[in-house]
Length: 137
Image (cartoon, rainbow, N blue to C red; front, side):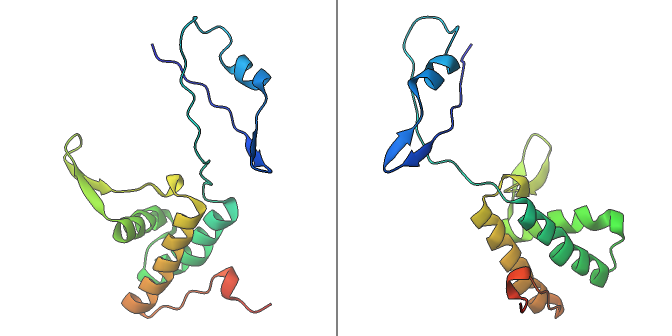
């Protein structure tokens, strides 16, 4: 059985700020043998403010304009994500599924989705959506 441990650190002055004690604690109890350590940049998942803006300033106004009931907003959300990022055939469920899950998008990808949806709403339905970054102070 493969084991994994995740240790998160920060780069400070060009050096990884992780203690040897943290690494030892993570593998405590593992059988003797070789281990592989992979280091990669952490991804920054979408933020709570991004998610709130998506639902309040994009999905809700579009849903109202298009005649969706409140409980149908999820369907519009999934349709927009699919329209933006595409879909693929999944043989397991015998259906097309979205290429991405919005919950797995990085902050940059979620900003792209939001910007795309604002443009799409204007082009497709003539709806002008205003995001917080576009409002006057």
